[in-house]
Image 1 (cartoon, helix red, strand yellow):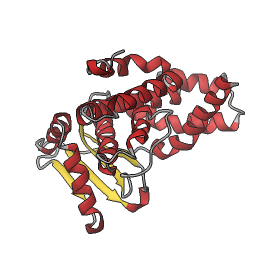
Image 2 (tube, helix red, strand yellow):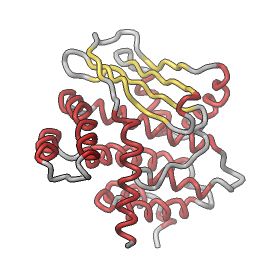
Image 3 (cartoon, helix red, strand yellow):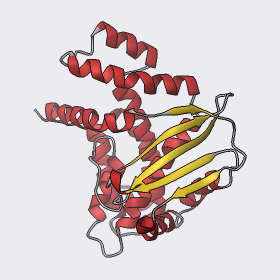
Length: 266
């Protein structure tokens, strides 16, 4: 019964959350020469965004990953803050040049990302921060910075990917999900098997692989940011529990990060 509940929860999270990320757009453009990071932040969100960015900059990994895009004149990273996304965030509007190189992307942050902890399925790292919400030394800015670096990781991943494969996957994943929901969740459907072979995996496998790599980036950030806090080991334990429960096949990518602080080894 426990396994069935977990499977149903994972399916629920995937079906509900996936459409929000499935409408990913790709564009072919000329390589920019005036790139960098462009902040589209309304005045009502500016003070909060500056605090989130300052929190990110407290870590070396945060500063380095920001500088990669801030100093690259051949890449445009647009960061938008809007009330429409609430506590969530997303990355899309990928820009590619004719050579197949990623030269731009847009990260959209909700105006309330400094609150709200995602479900442990697919977001084992961000979810673990719920353990720190009552700590006097912590605030929502750490959560917001963690969500931001999670999204930056999606840009990092896509920049290393093959344009044709990524575009093809993003095109056919919504088609697969639509058929899957209409055929009674029959993954052996001939059309779905054909799509799976074409994409190199089911949408769930493709999507969770992307999310878990971004969560590793979030974990690297937290490992540096909170490793002196008294709740640090509790957060690592929570991540471990989340990964073992929902992402057993992916635990190796999280294990190395967890081992970097010997004070949490038992």
